[in-house]
Length: 444
Image (cartoon, rainbow, N blue to C red; front, side, top):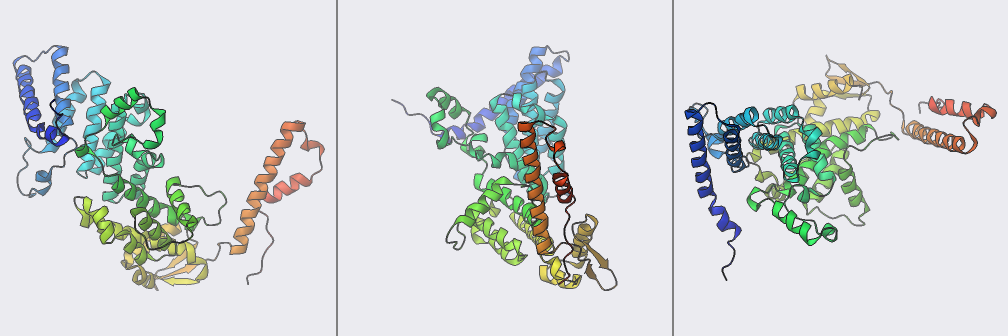
């Protein structure tokens, strides 16, 4: 009985398949040149052939185009960028079915993002408005959308737009089902929920191994992006009772680390990011940098990027800037004034960069201070509440919430006019708590 060919053997046949697709494409294009008024069936066949060729092209990184000397003329016949642009634009203009047009658009976004054309990929995704209608598409199209969004997030990270990277990746990573959503494997935890027929159907939808996106790299990029956003936010709103979580997955990882009775040196990728986050909390950018960028992390994550050196340089700069912001949020109450030159030396940043970061914090009212330009000094205004006052504000908000909750409970039981028959004590207490009335504390 003959055995089924292996995946590697089937992959070797891709060259022959691509040649057949190219021959069919040339034949249909010759028909197009011979007869300009083609029937709708012929136009649909051309669009299907174009989509088939796009499917064999969009996920491949074009090293030849990237490594070409800018002085050399561009080869528009073989450059994948121009080939994708020509094929996709024909489908956008001629195709009448939403499915083929949507898949072509997602492949176009993926190809742009793979080659670090961030603005082209972002604008095409936003103009398509696929975010509003993708839940009504078929499952293979939804898988393509997830892959395009993930590649868009990785591209944003390589370009230094950390918030955009986090926003693109948060939906995939927060669910804990990245492998399933990207069609790169089935989760064993949900095995009992699938019938044998459903399992066969889902296995047919799985992406081939050579088209996989590295899940560890994806998780690392997401956690590092969340760290660069979340740690300064946590330092700025340390005593805020209504502080919201930007990244629930990141907080879950931090809580699991805090529950461990004994924390040793980091070994896995996740432990390295947790250790780096704890170092950033106290403003130690050097320790944070060493936890995120080292030989082990380079081999697991950063060297997998095409231009890994540029990514690590950019990430180092971001770590320094966010560590500076975290340091100012955490320790600004201790200082009467701070020298910009000292801060530049501490965080190994250029003086104009430090000046710009602090000015932006002052303009956004994140830091209550003023800039003394002649002496390059930041003068603190000391309007932030002390530790005792911050705890008192937090207590007042919780008591206010408790009073409102009790009032709503009593209204449902005794009627809406219950408190109108009571004395003015509840109203006075609610007014005092809503205005955050606090006794004036001595300066000492």
